[in-house]
Length: 360
Image 1 (tube, one colour):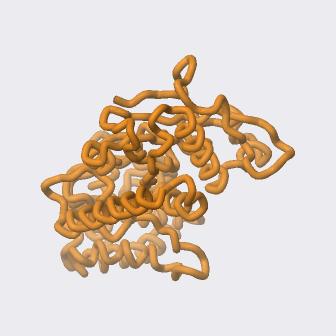
Image 2 (tube, helix red, strand yellow):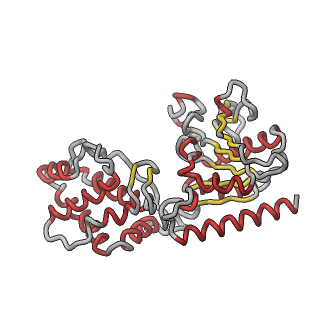
């Protein structure tokens, strides 16, 4: 069962507060960071700690078994303690409460480096204060940005964490290290796998939208075509194209073989479902744009309850398979490649724990 230590009147463990700035001397402010603990599987005589390096959302999202199911499935076998730490400036872990985002003097401390230092402090205090945890080796887990944090945590704090599983973590996606079009290529491959007609239709639609949005009349037609909540200004047609591009990217990200709700409800194999409306040779502009609308509605209006589309909604980053599918709970529909990946991951985690224990 999960325990919410931050919310207890007298926390069982945890320092009273975390430094807002771990690396300077001018700011001595502190804050409380929320973390969740599940100990029902834990061997108190040195069982490992599975630590989730929280990323950009409320930690309850990541502690959910549909998101981090791999940790929950492995915990009984490893006799592990589970800890899910909330990233500063998300959920209830606000350094300055409602004023946390009021200017750089407040939100300037929202960095990966500061978050990693929070996690190091948390684990250091936890292992020192909780009976039986002192000899527990830590395995860090994370998906997407959380996966980047897990990998960096192992690199920067090797004395705190023994191993890391970084799922769908774009740790090399920085200028000068990864081509700028790498992201788009991954998205394109997901749709091309279903049909070249599908990818061609999407490419063609962007230019058609640009041309149609150039006039007031065309912009009004696009607002109606895509059920937009607000008027589309001819001078700002890229907003619609960028939004559509992000929806397709998000479809690739949630391309799980089963129905899911990472942030929005989606059917199983959503890329295939979307491409059903685009796997044809279109003979006119209107039918192609109608196909595009029906394709994106697989995600934007899967429930049929959305009356209009808000262009301020954004999407995330896809992986080669659906986003961090290996980190989610096992499912009979999982592709064989993911089943194999989990076996390899478990093999290495066991190996690294044995080596760490032997050298202790």
